[in-house]
Image (cartoon, rainbow over all chains, first blue to last red; front, side, top):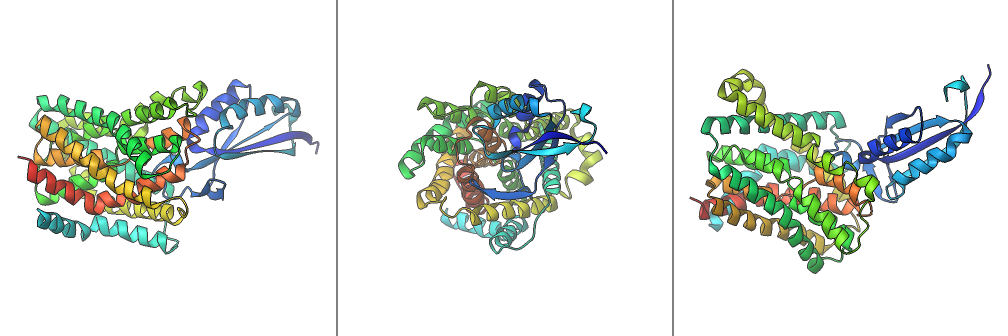
Amino acid sequence: METNTAKRVEIIIEAPMEERLTSALERAGVKGFTVLPVLGGTGRSGRWSREGQVSRAGGMVAVICIIREERLHDLLEAAFKVVKNHIGVVSVTDCQVLRAERF
Amino acid sequence: MLETILGLAADNLLSPIILFFVLGLAAAMLRSDLSVPEAIAKGLSIYLLFAIGYKGGVAVSDHGIDATLLMTLTAGIVLSFVLPLIAFALLGVMTRLNRTDAAAVAGHYGSISIVTFVAATSILKSQGILSEGYMVAVAAAMEAPAILSALWLASRGGGNVADSSEREGLLREILLNGSIVLLVGSFLIGLVTGKEGLAEIESFIVAPFKGVLCLFLLDMGLVAGRGLRNSRGTLTAGLISFGIVMPVLSSLLGLAAGLLVGLSTGGVMLLMTLSASASYIAVPAAMRVALPQANPSVYLTMSLGVTFPFNLTLGIPLYLSLASFFGN
């Protein structure tokens, strides 16, 4: 089976910022992304959990995009404008995808 | 009067809603694995907002709208704008928070906690004291102005308020946040459908209400306990004192406003409770967007871990005693 190299960008960001981030990605021409719930964790800003949250303010979400390498710069530029001041993690990894024309 | 306050506090402390809150708090502090799943917590809060909004609307349709409605709404909005300014000044005296954190905390104390309001209405009901049904609408109106005051306080000193791309849509999000839409929407539906409408859904929104409130408060106790457990190094003596002094001070302003407007004893007590309560739903979300540099563990722990338990246990009996003493 033929596979193709692509970049997998994972952005974990505060839940109240989700819509702003996904809108920025769409404006930057990103055709697809997946938003995943995350259960909890800990980091520089302390421990958090999505259980029993009375407000979305304390929760986080993960936004995952898989794109061609040449489009990575535009995506990161768009994402950075939204995430720069906020709690979260942005990571980029190499991955292999089937059906490269979809990305 | 002290006897009345102590008597009410004792009754209140032994009510199921408070005991379930304490159970949640203790379970979280003792690191029990008891938890309420996110979706269920959200479902419970939707139920409570729907029920309290609807019943408020029905009460207004039953008794009619009078001139004090507009005056009370205005008083609530003014209080929500002004309370953060007082909180900010008090934080400057009592704590060493930086300007951004102080502005964010101040915003929470100008806005309201709908669960504290619900608990207060529940206590009024158990004491057989009537209140104005439109206080629900006042609660909704008091959510947002404090956020604007907090942002103004942060930006006044050159604080780092979110740039225009982040502020984009913030006002719409604040005014149309799910809680406000559901509360106001249910209120309007209650107003239109009146007692006949209530009779149709009574078995769903009246009888189970207190039980659902108990479960919700169990979850609030768990969230507050987890916050307190993780707050080591965050909560100073100054912050804890502020979390108790500020609601009492705010309640006195609510008392003055309620008496000035001419509310009933129950209405005055509810306006005091709304003034004294601190937000943990609308304001934290707005602060994460607009004041990302502010430390969420400070304002969430203050609001949920200090002021909410204080209001629930001692504050509400105190406000009821003061309202009864000064009211009609």
